[in-house]
Length: 68
Image (cartoon, rainbow, N blue to C red; front, top):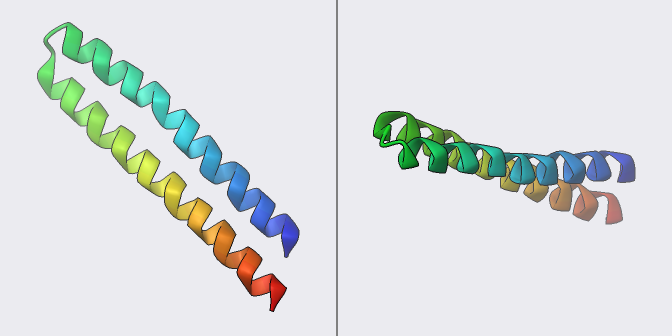
């Protein structure tokens, strides 16, 4: 069970860190006044952050489950 929690932790942190790329691209699009692409990229970045946080939450839940 500890391996599963570690895997979820790595994936969750990877998603959160990987979302920085989408935020960076959104800023680039907004700087070029491409507002639609910037907005869509920002939505994708927020969804990736949300997925990463949910996966990290799953890691904490799996650690709790294994300690019982």
